[in-house]
Image (tube, rainbow, N blue to C red):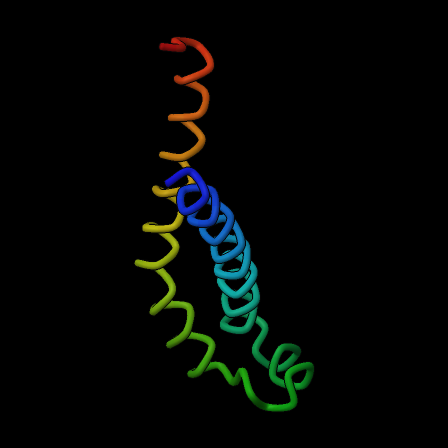
Length: 82
């Protein structure tokens, strides 16, 4: 059971990092689309950046809440051990 929990925590942290990086890059791709479009060889055009950025909102919130839950539960366990 602990192995699955640790794996879930690690996966959450990795996915959160990836989503945050994509969120920043696509946000930059909306405001500075000429730079991002040339750097990504046309893959992240302004419309694509906007669509990806918009679709990342819910996953970002879910992963952030999971991350906060894992972090807070760890801190609470240290303060009040059974």
